[in-house]
Image (cartoon, rainbow, N blue to C red; front, side):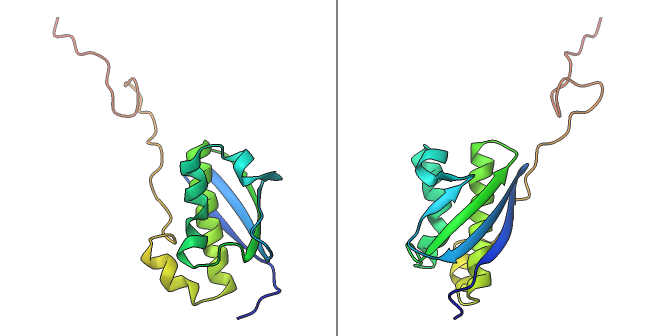
Amino acid sequence: MQHAVKTSAVGRRKTAVARAILAPGTGKILINKKPLEQYFPLATLRSDVMKPFDATQTTGKYDARVNVEGGGSTGQAGAVKLAIARALVEVSEENRAFLRKDNLLTRDPRMVERKKYGQKKARKRFQFSKR
């Protein structure tokens, strides 16, 4: 297992894009130069970001620096989660099985459906009037 090497990976979710850089350390996670607790005040989003570390029992072994842009808070948390998971696979191929088991390496393909012409939204139509 190579340790003292920085690894980076990209994660995407909806319209959010996250670039994560993993380095051996004490478990500090900086997202857009802010600590995890400050960037994601919601506990659910914080636990989502930590899932790859929990799945591979590497909590506290790596420092993560993440740049994330686009989308909302939920999409950004999902993008960060995928980026960290992919970086952990780059660190050690043994991590792949654990991450795959918890479905952490799958890119969520769901995107916002586009609005169609002659309609109010993507699927909602204007009210039909017979006369």
